[in-house]
Image (tube, rainbow, N blue to C red; front, side, top):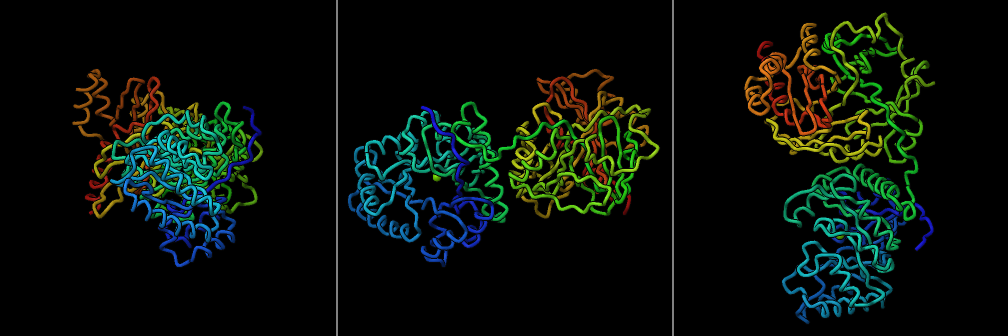
Length: 620
Ligand code: MG
């Protein structure tokens, strides 16, 4: 069946996704760019606005009301109860008329008296649809994953088929379908006019009760583990013509600033539409609303660290040369091999202030970022400075798109010194920046991962979860396909309380070397403060890997951490924490190792803490 290419999809969001009251949620949704909302009944019940005023408020904001939800426990084997339910429904139909919305979500019953017999269920759905149709309204029937008898989309579809009423169709919810492992492919065979509504949610893979999983851990598309483009494609192929609507229950989003969460949510739908259009024949089904593919990334252009005096001597000891001084700002350029680090001495706390990526087309990258609602970085620029395209990431890091050597070359902002990056007599041999590690604020981890991935055009890489000394840490890497740009994001899984002696939200720059032992020896000889690792680690390493005596002795001497997988090994040496939060690592990848040394992170974290306590004792 051939089909006209679609215009950009309409987007909607259920008010339950956002924190606050209706008067907070509606403007947040509108400002983020949503076309419509699903009104979640408890939000309306708690609101002082009568339904007619909600309707006007939405119209003022340019929002349609696409759905009223949920209507629960419709069917019953008890005729009296069912009669009472129809009475309740008539009340809700009146609310819908006042709201100006024509579709109500009816979810499959979870009640003990739910109807098992599909004929009786169809009869009751038909009766409800008949009443809705009399008022020009429609019923979208949804199978809850934990419904008593109807818990898969094929069962809800069977009931809708049997009921056979034009005012009765399906609501498909990606969470209910994918959480049960149902194959969405057969959705393509359902007539499009029977797909009344589509709700989208992602989720991480979790082994837990599906109701708890749904109520607490849903995520916006692209933030979890579900393959949502593969879900959306058959829905569109069936001919679904309604909005892409988000229904996400999440403990963090429920507390987050609704304006910010709405932007994150809207970005997720744009990225989902883009990914779906990029799938095989998906482009016939949906217009890519981003319409600006991410230009190729060619590496890390530079990392800017705000720092005190402690950083420069360490960079020198690690073999970096100070090659330039900024024309107008207290910023130094340090280089070695392909690695460039800017040291900003403006006085801010030690931190990764900016990431810059080498982009094949920085202006196109900036346009893409704008389409994905990335906040543009406000910058004060001197007359001789390059106008670099830049945005601010959710963790506050500035992200620059550069093309070193092009007309708007950032390197022109620096007056060269006598030193050159090529003059490497130090024996350290840093070849480039392997990756940057950024601990994320708890509330913005999922947002940040989606931001970096979509705005920079990266793909999900390794994920992990490890028991660190001061709490569980979750980690997620994003990288380009050729692994020229890698970011490792981590988050402490629970908010920290009083007991938080670890380094708070650590950040690091991993520097690639070909021979970590030679590099570490040279760095230590030059006075670099390498982190000491306890003997117990090496006893365990010996037991696990049976390394040669010489290698193990060298590791122990230099503080090398060695993570080994079937693909290869990740060898690293870390510096102490410099200025409270930031450290540097020398990293050697062996074979096809694509990880980030996370198995050794607890050992590294304990060592950093021990070192800090020792320093504090000396000061005292
Ligand atoms: Mg739903």
